[in-house]
Image 1 (cartoon, rainbow, N blue to C red):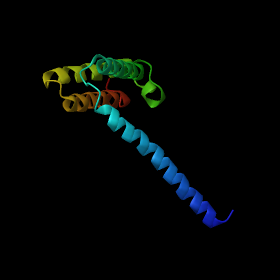
Image 2 (tube, rainbow, N blue to C red):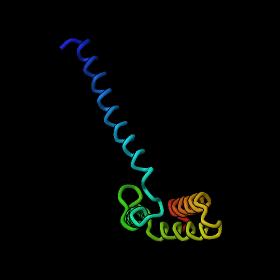
Image 3 (tube, one colour):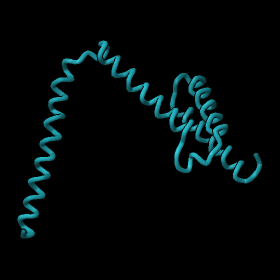
Image 4 (spheres, one colour):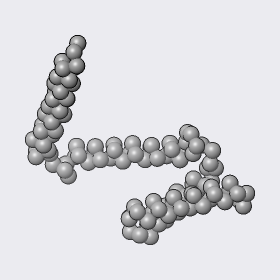
Length: 117
């Protein structure tokens, strides 16, 4: 196999992959026009997505792996509580809740690593 045929093969593969991607995207655009975003099926998919996200976040907080597993559950729960409180105080704004929860978690783990807690 020469370099020229290898390059031609790669360009052909790139074209095929691009076409396969854009065909599905075009189909999605055509179908999306007929979908009612407030319909029962859309609401069901939304509920399933939120349920999966809640399960994933619960799994990460309660049974973490990696370096997060080395932190105390109390620190993770305190950061979660602060995040929920800030989310409620700031009228469902995610940014202050995320920043606040992260700062609390960072402060608690830092204080523990220096032996202050």
